[in-house]
Length: 87
Image (cartoon, rainbow, N blue to C red; front, top):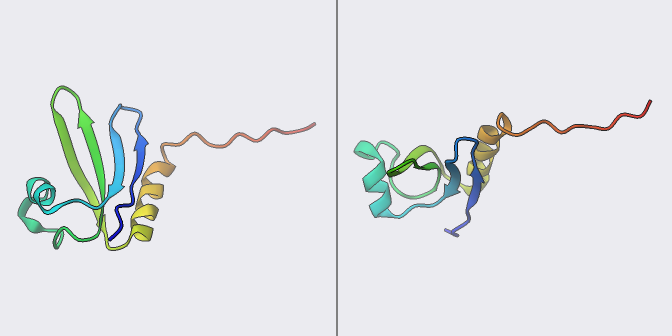
């Protein structure tokens, strides 16, 4: 698996990532192995408000699927494109 990563800074100062994660990180942040293992790509939110914290939001089996999850999450957070109109 390639180590492809997407990253975006959110309005609250946290970061949203799409990335594979290692076994140690998986075991530390996924309770009860309810996502089926550390293979695949993960949608993660990283917060550092006094104490660093990583939260696993979702898992996808391919980078393509994870990219779509990332785009869906970010779609509501981006400013709409403003088109210039001529009168």
